[in-house]
Amino acid sequence: MKMDKPDMEQILYLLISEYGERDWRPHDSPLNVLVQTILSQNTSDANSRRAFHSLLASFPSWEDVASADVYRIASAIKGGGLSEVKARYIKQALGEIWQKRGRLELDFLNEFPLDEARDWLKALPGVGTKTANCVFLFSLGRPALPVDTHVYRVAKRLGLIDARATVEKAHKMLESLVPAAKVYAFHVLMIEHGRKVCQAQRPRCLDCVLNRLCQYFQQGQRTK
Image 1 (tube, one colour):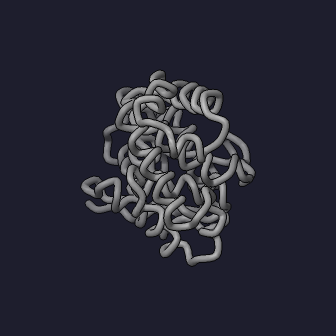
Image 2 (cartoon, rainbow, N blue to C red):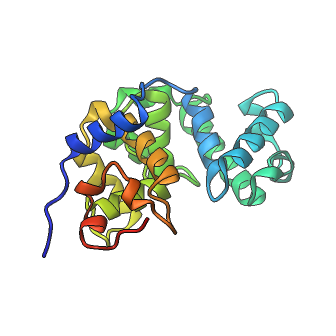
């Protein structure tokens, strides 16, 4: 029997009760967040942070990065994995921003409606929906919802999105369900819940604060 989607207000209330409120605040400049998010693709947070700090230490400015040889950039970020691919994306993205805008900054994106601004950013090399949404959410304070592996997994188990929905479709579907003012809290709390309780291999269903709302649990696929 098909179950109704769980209530978003209840999910947010229970997650906040369990883990605490999460205040929405800018983390860094949009250009810094863009580069950080490219570096975070297919690697751990620790590796991407190390690569980003190494990149900043190796070049005086983003203009210097944009002008540098790809292999020099790759050498600076080698601890982050896929260094040559990411170096090429970073150099090309910076080059296109510079060419289109005449300077390396992305604050102008706040002048456009979110979908238009997101399309502009996604036209850059190495920038998909998740990367673009990270820039808007973590730097520009816009209600764009990044869907990482934790958010995707927990949302599917809860029944917020169809089990067959792609990650790309999940961005739009979840963004339409979450109140704009709660997008940041939803994103970070779903990640925390996915890491601590709703893990990929051995979800702790009986300890889960969301289990009475969860289709995965209610359909008998529960675990200890």
